[in-house]
Amino acid sequence: MAYTVKTENGSYRFTHEELVEIANKLILKRNEFNHVDKLFDIVTNYYNVQKHHIMSSSRKQEYVEARRVLSYMLTEHAGYSSKAAGRVLAIDHSTILYHVRYIKDSLDVYEDTKRVIDHCIKQFYAKE
Image (cartoon, rainbow, N blue to C red; front, top):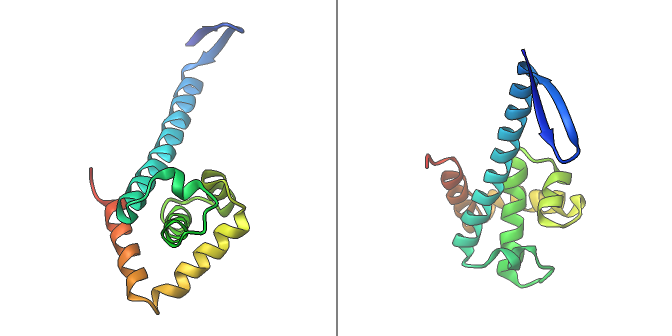
């Protein structure tokens, strides 16, 4: 069975299987955005900062810490590559790698870092 989809640019024919595949890709893409939004909410609430503070190039300590934690959570728990996380945060992938390494090294040394990451992990995996 074939379906015809009409758009401003013309008509396109799809099989049922093709439409299911397209729908599944769109759902996966939406879930990726949900992960990003959820992580931004968790981190901004924890640090009591706004999203634009994390996205800024400011070196203010709480903004940098929030950026580090978000970089770590995106790559280690949301499945983003360093390049993809860099696109989300509008920073270079090498900076993401640095942030992730910093958090990993700090987990065994600083109790505060462990507490922040544990909180973010629990919130991220919590059922809504």
